[in-house]
Length: 112
Image 1 (spheres, rainbow, N blue to C red):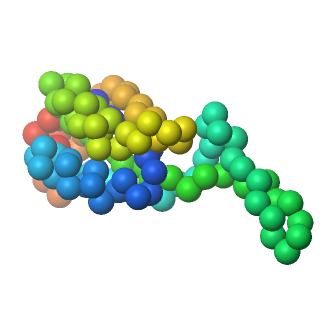
Image 2 (image 1 turned 180 degrees about the horizontal axis):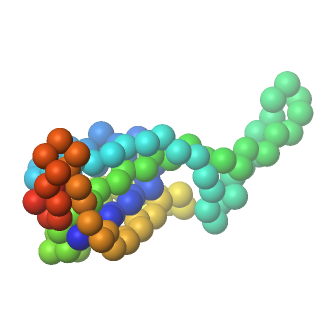
């Protein structure tokens, strides 16, 4: 099993949710997050004072899936979330040792 965490632009959330539901993903967790990458924010003026905004709002979508699903899901996320501009986001893939369904105590891929 793998954990796939995608950090994308907030406006990509709805199209991404739709695409992942079409791909029969069994569940996902979505969080609003802030951060920065290569863009390091931007400058704006507030009441005549220059302000550096270096925390960019993003959305984090986390999935735990079977190993065989990872490549197809990564391709789907990239296809939906890519604008070609700086700040499109990143996808992180990490191994998952075990999953436990709290209600039944079921473990492993069956608990997904």
